[in-house]
Length: 302
Image 1 (cartoon, rainbow, N blue to C red):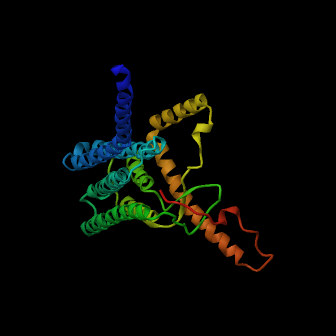
Image 2: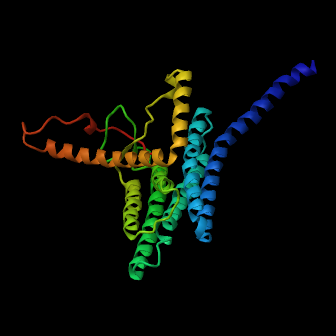
Image 3: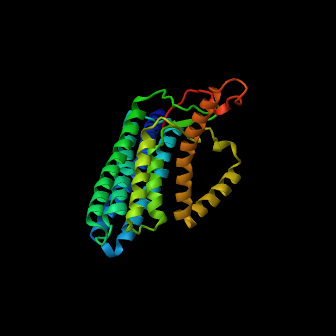
């Protein structure tokens, strides 16, 4: 009789322990995100004291940042799936993003792009490039932190160039995407640092543009309207296996191209919207009707 009475209490205790474990699961992925960022920072620092193998350390730092992106995507998704979202988890995720996608890539961009410039070039030019590079990388970090702060306080942010009503968009370039652009560029060159002054100048432009796009209010496609659960499980597994293989086998090229395409998609969307507005201002009969991309909608950043 006592055994039967104790069963409900035991089940309640087991459910409570399971519930606590479910709340811990998203934070474990966030911890993995932080760990990847910490590893990237340490590898970048190790490159400073090992000129002969600097490219190996820089490449590993870039790979760590790239590997952190799935962790960042999974922690929030798992929290929503298990209904274990919390304010603590949100704040921890933001702090993790500042470390892994802010501090780590800005430090990597600085060391890879400017620290190893040869002394054989003009000393004044080299000094200016290093100083400008350090400043631009700092702006990238500030841009990423500002975007995360804006996301934390915004509940219904509106982009300047609203898109199609059936699609969901990010407001500004997400910080993981900006970090992916920098890390994939380093990985594309297998970590071999920049040694030409004109490449360093291009790198200043890339880092600065990434920082600007994060704090902009331009729209970037989020892909959140894609529902993978609608697909047949076997088809999804087959397609996922192909994607993983292609990225793993040709990671330096595939990730670099994907990052560039995503960045330019936001720039193109803004340019197309501005062009459409100018056409609508033309006298009647001289322009076509507005495209569906010009229709406003309520959006949330991410």
